[in-house]
Image (cartoon, rainbow, N blue to C red; front, side, top):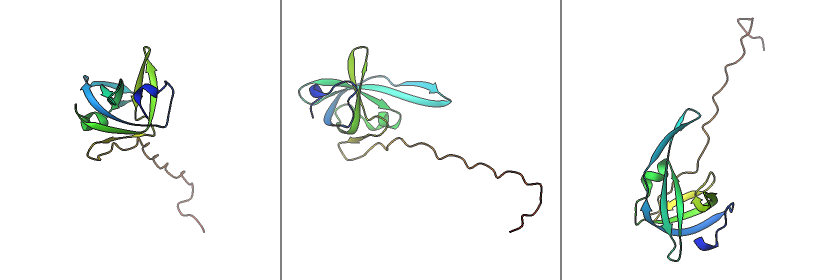
Amino acid sequence: MKLAELKAGQGKVDVSVTVSAKGDVRSFDKYGKQLRVCNATVSDGESEMTLTLWNDEIDMVQVGAKLQVSNGYVSEFQGKKQLSAGKFGKLIVGDGAAAPLKAKAPAKAKPAPASSDDEMAF
């Protein structure tokens, strides 16, 4: 798949690209979590697009790196298409290192309701 063929709102994107530039990292707080985001410019040899990197992906990717975006997502911001690994995709760096899929933290177990009896009969 080529970058020029991608459309905003498209999912299940598999594309190979090379990082040509990497912007500044921005940090922000959302729902009590500290998040980081960075935009990189990527090329498939014919066209360029912005790739949005989140958290651990930022540290994995360097200028000149070859990347494989698997099951990615294309969005649009200020009239320009942006590629991201998205919630269900992954980003594989040339050496095979992959950013993990974004997983939700396991729910905490709720304490058992208090009983008026000290011992329970079975």
